[in-house]
Amino acid sequence: MDDKRKLLAYCGLYCGDCAGYSQDIAKAAEQLKEQLEKYKFHLTVKAMFSEQFKNYDEFKKNLNFLTQMKCPAVCTQRDDTKCNVWHCCRDKGFAGCYECDEFENCDKIKNALGNIFFDACIANLKNINEMGVDNWIENGKRFWFSCDVE
Image (cartoon, rainbow, N blue to C red; front, side, top):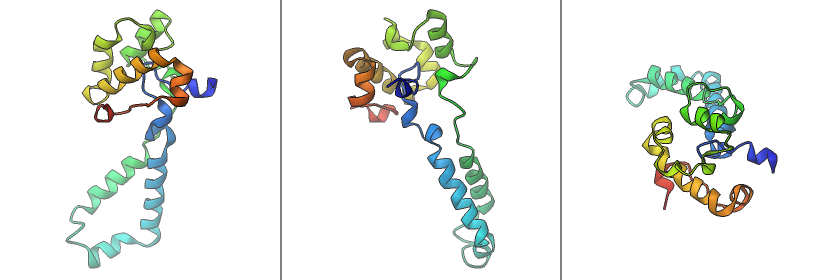
């Protein structure tokens, strides 16, 4: 369970559910890039799909970006001096925000992650408090985006 516990970010997001951590999107983008090069798709675009791929250079730029969507390490294992949540938990000696009585109204979580993640973090943190960390990791519903919150 310790390995799975390491995937729990301070804010309540679970890194094991992240496309950056799994690198699945980066790998798929790299495979697509290789196939496009193998079949010289840029020539096919010019000959047959110029209307559909008016911005093929922009597409390639975005594809290259997707190949870089790789998280170097889970947040609890990094020395991330930019994240106020990271600093707050480290300064207070917390394993996560779920140990703090003020997480439901925390501006640090909201400012660090923005509104798209805030409700998901709060839902996760509440569930962690109710279920316990290990039980939540194994059996709890884990939210990633606020739109996932029911």
